Each structure stands twice: as structure tokens, then as C-alpha cells.
Length: 85
Length: 220
Ligand SMILES: [Zn+2]
Picture 1 (cartoon, rainbow over the protein chains, first blue to last red):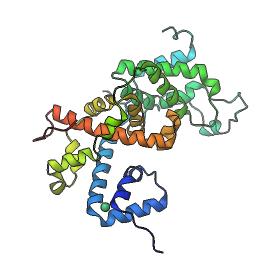
Picture 2 (cartoon, rainbow over the protein chains, first blue to last red; picture 1 turned 135 degrees about the horizontal axis):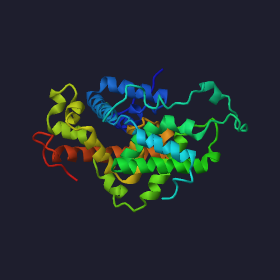
Picture 3 (spheres, chains in turn yellow, orange; picture 1 turned 30 degrees about the vertical axis):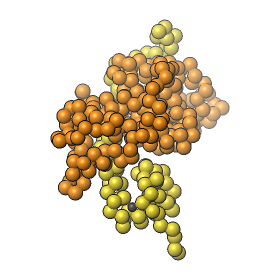
Picture 4 (tube, each protein chain N blue to C red; picture 1 turned 90 degrees about the horizontal axis):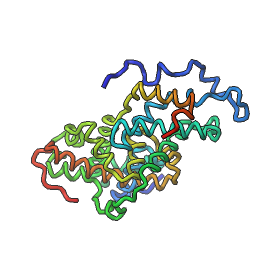
């Protein structure tokens, strides 16, 4: 089957969606094919993927303070008591 | 910060089997899980999210607490079997917006003037692309979590919300759309702009802290 190939611009327009796994499988395949043969786009892709990974790793979940958990439990047990603010 | 070895929320998780939740039908109130049983397991995520919306821990705690009370008042409106996390995050997001109603000055047009691939181009200026096996990692290596938080909190509200849900919670576009109550296409465009602005702000943070050697003066 001969299929259309994406241009660099078409790949760039889908780069976010590709990185975030929001593309449908047919489009994923077309982007993947382009990235295999285009050094410029694959360099941009690797960089953006690296930025995302770096930020997501550094922004990982922070454990809730025990005092907050206790406050929330107390508030839920008696919503009226702490709802004065 | 002190870290427990146990998984977050583990000790406070209710001692019930998962099947007990799954079999609950919308009409039977008898086996309906309590708000506490649903809320405590998502509290770590809620707090992490709130911390990226407001500037400090005290405000983040207030926001989580306020959202918990709002959830208690509206709990009868929660539909059993739907995503509780998304429901609570939506309430938390609304509480955040209610507190921070001020109009923002960053126009979409200004954001569109930020070039795409901002950090990629800066890495090119520094000559990283030909020489480093991981130009992104190298550029961001010296930027720590507090500085990323600083950049994230500096985003206009509606961009900050989607960026926090995306980077901190790892939500899909559909999940973010569900929380923010906008179409997926709106999430996509806000996220695109949020990323561009975040890249610009991160670059500025890196320069201000002298983290980038030989960095030229940036635009905007
Ligand atoms: Zn290309």
C-alpha cells in the first residue's frame, strides 16, 4: 500500500500529540516513519521528549503533610465545625 | 522533607476490598463508600497539584482543605462508578479559580509570539546539539524542582492549571478536559502555549541563577 508521507511541517504540527500518545495509530506510524529518516525532526523530537521527561521527573508527587490529612479527616467528620472561614 | 518508605496514602487506605467498591450500584446508598475512603487515597496527588497552583505550602493546604469541605457539601452529586479523582480535582480547580479571579495581563497574542522550540534553539546557541548526547538533560540539569515550581507558578492561571495537571499528574488530554471542563481541543491549545511559556520562563530562571554558562541575553 502506498501511503502519504508526512512533511517536516506535518510532523511538527503533531509533535506534541505524538509525544503525549494522543495520536491515532495510523498517524503515529506516519510520524514514526518520518522521524526514522529525518535527522532534523528526530533531533527536535528527542529534545522535546527530554524536556518533558526532565520536568515530569522533577515535578513528581509530594507527600501530603500528616497534619493536613488529620485536618481533612476532622473536617469530613464534622463539616460544620471547620467551615467557619 | 521527611519521606515515608511506604506508598503514599498506604497507611490511611480503608481496609476494604476493591470489589466492595466496584459492586456498588448508583441507587444503593447502603454500600456507598464514604467520602473519606475515596478522598484520602488521592490526597497526595491533590496536595502536589495544589502546591503548583498557589505559591506556598500553607495556601496549598488551605486549598485542599477548602476543596474537601466543598466535596462534602456536594458529595450527593458525585456519581458512583465515575472517576472520583477527576471529580475532586475539578472542585479543587474551581476553588482555586474562585480565589484567584483577578484578570490576567498575558494576552494569547503575546504567548503566540514566543517561538516554538524555544529551549531547543537556546541549546543550539550553546552548541549542545552536536556535542551532547542529551542536550535537553544537560540544559536542564542544573535547574532544580523549586526553580521549575517557580516557573510553573508564574504562568497565567488557565495555563498553570493545565500544565500542573499534565506535568504533575501525568493526566491525558481527555482527563484534563474532564477536570477543567473544557473541550479537548482547548486543552491541547492551552497546553501548547503553556509549554512554550514554561520553556521561556525556565530559560530566564536558568539565566537569572547563572546556571547557563555563556548564555546570551534572551528575547522576551
Ligand atoms: Zn523532518
